[in-house]
Picture 1 (cartoon, rainbow, N blue to C red):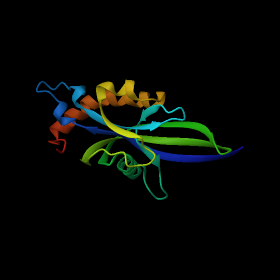
Picture 2: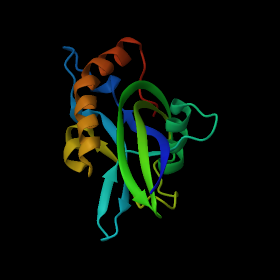
Picture 3: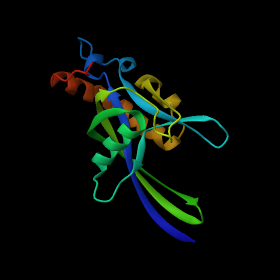
Length: 167
């Protein structure tokens, strides 16, 4: 069977980090939100995942993550941390494909959620505290656990840097 390699990038857009830091320095993860996309599977079930897509020739992974998030959610964002990589194999049209997906944490910059991308059924802001139960795929849940662990320190750094969520 013919094989092929594909590379994608995307991740979690994060909003509300600085605002989630309490006066005592603790962080309320219920006040930090991430943007997810929902797609219908072959059985008609809505499966939630992180936005992502193919790296174009000459494009770096961070630029891909920012572009794909914008295309799939309508949100402008910027990469501020690496989250991790997932790789897996699947077969499509008689070709065995090895796919590598680079995930990042992206800071919300501007925009309103929309599901105008034909590949996306629904988009939503989800509190980080509910992220693990919402994601459909085990590999993405593993990355979400990592984000859950990283976000308190990152939120404190955002507050110390004087960054507030736009709007």
